[in-house]
Amino acid sequence: MRAHCRLLILMLAMPCAATAQARRPTRAAAAVRPPAPAKVWAAVSAGSGYTCALDNTGQAYCWGENLNRKLGIGDSVNIRRPVAVETPQRFQSIAAGVFDTCALTREGATVCWGGAQNPSLPHSALGELRLRQMDYASGGCGIAVDGIAWCWGANGAGQLGSGRESPSTGSVPERVAGMRRYQQVVVGSAFACGLTAEGAAWCWGRPGTLGTGASAGSNVPVAVTGNHLFTQLASGSEHVCGIAREGSAWCWGDNGGGALGTGQNANAGIPVPVSGGLNFKALSAGFAYTCGITVAGKAWCWGTNANGVLGINTSRNALTPAATAGNLVFAAISSGNGHTCAITTAGALYCWGDNADGELGIAHAHTCRTQMAPGQFDVRPCAVVPTRVQDPR
Image: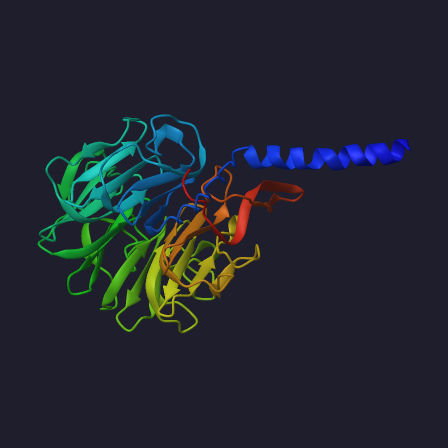
């Protein structure tokens, strides 16, 4: 009887509960926010322990080591994913150096940030000089709108190219000697090279990197031997590479780790062909290694492979070009002091190599062990294959 009554009570209560439920206002479902579109990148520069890049609007972002505030964010804290540089200006190109960063506005003005002597937020540099192309390491060179080359910074090896013999630092840009008009200029550790409008290469500064075969340096431009006509130059710390008009790559200078790509370890005082018969559309030279993009968009790297900087999924050096892992198609590439970054044809950004200071900007890293001496290893985070950079916060 009790069970029957309990059932009856439950049955009588059900309509009331249903009525109460019907009278309760219905809460609207929360709107689903669509994911933000992935960042589209237009340019990248791998520096010393950090990276800077431009998105397709010209906004600058940097990440990695923030010594001397070279990330342009007002403090010196390392950042492991892209963060916007604190400036409203938009840029056409950017160059991450060793201690500071410089970029060109769309009007050709130079803006720099960081540096031991001026650790500040982005500020105008080079006065009224307007440039259409620039390269920067610990010093810089640029091409003015009239094609004349100018350089600034240290001059210990004559790398300003102005003919001035004093090793003191140039506090203002100095005009590179000669009346040649250049389409591109690149800088290394203590030298620079320019590519004339006709495609001839001229270099100045430290011996061994000038491409003349001579044992002496020069504080004015000297012609690279071989009468080669190049479409692009790329400078590493101690070597230079160029793309000949038919697409073949040629390199000269220090060959430590196989940076010249000849299959041998010997240095080359004049241009020598890179092995493999590949045709390139872009080259970038880093510290003792080189990377290039073929006409098909595939990235190939060669030289020292510390912490996977070649992106070939191994720690072995490569004396000749080796294809990076994956089936990515790239449009631009930049080789730094210990890491490499490249932009795909769709605008996605990938980096690989050393990640000790977060310079890869990736979410997860592997661990690389580099033997420094018998029983001694340098252990640090890295990526041995191209890994996609996180979008900014």
